[in-house]
Amino acid sequence: MTELKDTRRQAPPELAAAYAEIFAGLDRLGPGHEETTARMLALVHPFLPHPARIADMGCGTGADAVDLALTLPEAQVYAVDALPEMARACRDRARRAGIAPRVTVFVGDMCGDFLDRLGMDQLDLIWASSSVWAVGRGTALASWAPLLRPGGWLLFSDLVWLSAPDQRPRDIAAFWKDAYPDMVTPGQVVTEIAQAGLQPISQHLLSAEDWQAYYGPLPERLDRIRARAESPDSALARAASALASEIRIFDSGFGSYTSGFFIARKPLWDW
Image (cartoon, rainbow, N blue to C red; front, side, top):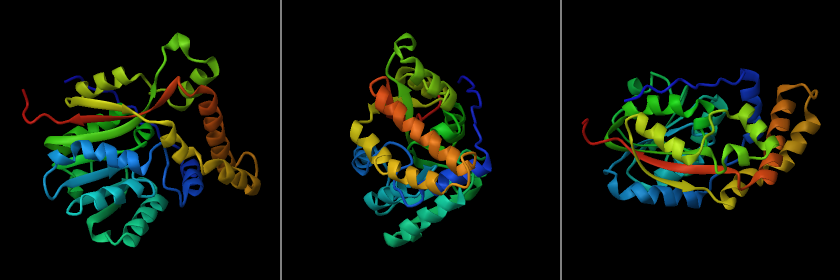
């Protein structure tokens, strides 16, 4: 098995707190939709044991964690997020849905070596929607593969290029080189999955509706955030400006990149 490089990228605490404030109360911290969650889960549902043990890595405000628990009514879901504000929102969402006993929320590094000590090993499914970028695929795959039981599943979404390097608009390529240098083509992601000792099963590109569910509520909120920011140089103003730039880049570059779900499985035995 090829050793994958550590690609962890840490945001300054004040910037992380700013993003938490911007996304407070929203369902999506990245492209996705509850129908997409249901469709992806349906592909592996028949292969999951009852009850299943699931981890939602980088759970955000808990939309997917709660959907997973509701779809699999006997499952135990572990939800992990580095930001206390997000973990609190996930707990509140689970409580409102009446499933708090089955959704255990932790504040911490979703690739931390403490996860197995909290019972997050021999997992049947690891779910990670739009959260891999925060640590990089190399770190995520190397950290999560050992937590899966033999035959366990990994479903994650990540940004991918749809165009060759010489066909990417220059401004879009420059933006993502700075914002997410780990971004590659779907084929390269599949190669990295195999290098991590997992079996690549399938890939599914997300639609414009998935992006609208993410970006749709943001522009109005960003305008309000910037209007009340203490100064243009504050962490809150900088976070809002970065997200506004991301939306502009997407509007001009749709078709050259998107986000995709990747489904992988841990082999039943080690050859």
